[in-house]
Image (tube, rainbow, N blue to C red):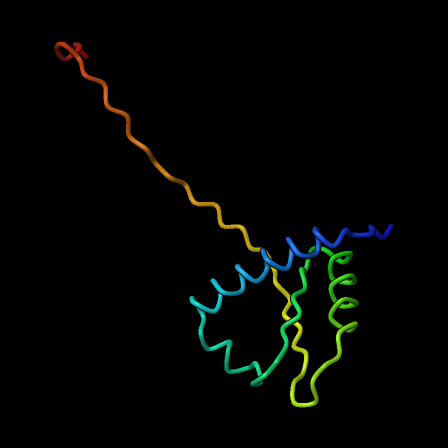
Amino acid sequence: MEKKLMPEEIADKVFELTEQFNQYVFDNPTILDSIPDRSVLVFLDADDPDFNKANVELAESFPQPADSRRVYVRMQKHVRIIEQVEWEAEILPSPEPT
């Protein structure tokens, strides 16, 4: 069932994906080679078809300058689980016998 998104929800998601894309570009600058100059980026979330539909409709509702093109950027979330070990110190009056 399609969910109708509020404009604020779309804006929040675009902001989030823009931040994530900027981080990706920082880590992988060669991706910029595949984006033509004067492109308008339209972000898509691989896991959110309702957002994608709303954002594409929004992007297509604005006139596009003749010398630019829309580039659709699908963002896919990857979760890395990293085990972090923390040590705890305890002060003892003397070593306990083993």
